[in-house]
Length: 305
Ligand SMILES: Cc1ncc(C[n+]2csc(CCOP(=O)(O)OP(=O)(O)O)c2C)c(N)n1
Ligand code: SF4
Ligand SMILES: [Mg+2]
Image 1: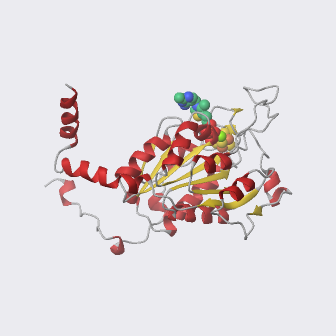
Image 2 (image 1 turned 45 degrees about the horizontal axis):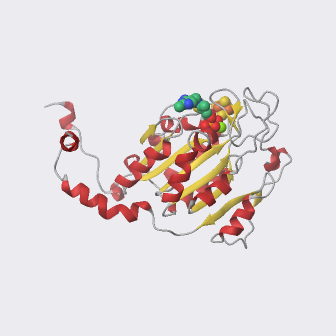
Image 3 (image 1 turned 180 degrees about the horizontal axis):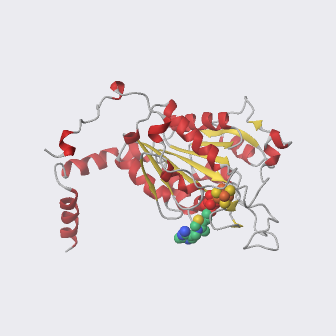
């Protein structure tokens, strides 16, 4: 008898299993620079998975390319380190075909709003159920300091050594206007707040977007000091009387001068693409019930002949 045949199958009922431990969900050791804000975001992601007791086969971590996009390597679960800017298209496929999974996508400001800007807009408007955390460091970190779509005017980089001329995009305004149904802002310097935002986003039935300021200590050190009380700045929360269902109020909040406010700007319920298409995809799955993947592919190819 082979070894594999003697292995016991893991219990299927989550109730019977031991709570998820950090050891169980950590994979490779992160390779970021010392002090990089992404460490704190990853630590909070582990914490969230543990807090919510999501076993590894129930979570998917998808990312594009960039320092921040290295997340899937560090999580012992399903995941994909996908093409630069295309994380959301891959994550959408997973979300639509596997409603039993929690789909998390991570990335940087370049991945999300430059090469991936189009996918961001369309995933938001389609309201595909997932949580998307953008670690915004206002620079391309992995490729060693180029101007990103969120770099402030005058930022000197390898692509703008005279200082950036182009008006930066505002991720919060972009998300709200594109149709995201949960839009929040947080920072790596406030892990408690970051966990709170991720918890809320995870419970949201729709496309949940979080802009998380995450300092690139190597190429844009001090970028977020104005929001860090330890560096003489102020971490101001969204006022308690802010109505998260008021789109105009959310937009106004997003227009405040840097460092702005932190918290949930906008949250509404709108049918997800997942719910709207469930009937169509269930019918397609039923049609191919019992067939192997290659047989499904073969059927499709045969139709093209
Ligand atoms: C199609 C394609 N174009 C360009 C690149 C080069 N590239 C890799 S990461 C990156 C930008 C990374 O910046 P960001 O998304 O902000 O992530 P960070 O490293 O700052 O976390 C670029 C331009 C690539 N890998 N693939
Ligand atoms: S280059 Fe910047 S973003 Fe990349 S690991 Fe280093 S500090 Fe972090
Ligand atoms: Mg970046």
